[in-house]
Image (cartoon, rainbow, N blue to C red; front, side):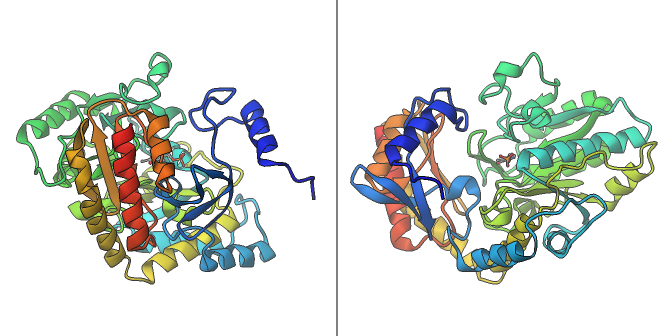
Length: 434
Ligand SMILES: *Cc1c(COP(=O)(O)O)cnc(C)c1O
């Protein structure tokens, strides 16, 4: 074992050498040092504002559905570790990956038959894009190589996903000159219950008419736009997109990396519209937050289309594709979720968030409070002071990570009512401070 390092030594090394998400080098904000995590609690190496443990309101970016250090997931990892943690997937296969793929086909909307296991959400989006571009290439229509999306989205940080992230609000405007130029519709009108606005529908139809000849696929996050602004829209727009895509020969990709596995109240958000996409991306909660794995699923039409091409293979194959350890934990996480009455848990969290966040609506500087499924959002009318807001949350014993004009939470489904109330109190405190 290496010499133990003190928290101060670790933090000094971290600051000097380690990049953090969207961080400067050297780091400016002092991260909290986590020693372990269990249930919905993060245990810190040092006290922060009187707390050694924080209730996690972030589920580690939508992923830790069942909380941390879960005995069932631990056992799945341990059991698989005893067999093999990895073997290459080219020319070899194994039970965890096969079972997981079959399970995903079974639980996702009817028609999605084929599964590409990728090593992160962004890569699954790259693969989805490649599937769509290759489909049209195989069909002898190479001009169909652009993507279409609506503003306000987030699809990841690698190159193609960046090109369909919101071009203004996001972190990627830096690259506007270097990214592939995609076709952007206005952001979908806000409001889950707002219904379909005919003027917006016409706007979409106009874009399809003008651009379908050069567009391979429309890609969107169904029902909730997540890291792009935590906005909700009517599921009706997904039906509009399905119809327009069919009429104009454009493939439809749903990115359910954040919304999948029950977060919005249905197992996949697109179920709320009764729409099956041509390609579906899942990730984040796939492994219950244990390991990095994502998947792109497609219909037989897409797979067969690619197979008819001059290059009849899908040209992608990451080194750690189908990683057995991640696949075993993912399988266990899906079974754990579906083996319980998760709908009731998500509903319970939804009403807890609605009640607990209501007071935020009366705070100065708050524009809107909205909840859907196990997602609670307080939107301010100004850029949040992230340092002050996070600090206020930690003082309340809760871990949150506000961004832009948003203080939000998507807690693990196992969060009990007392912890949920604490999270809501912290969101309100953070909104007030930020
Ligand atoms: C997080 C996210 C991604 C990217 O996934 P990574 O695993 O971070 O690469 C893509 N799309 C959506 C909707 C996401 O929320």
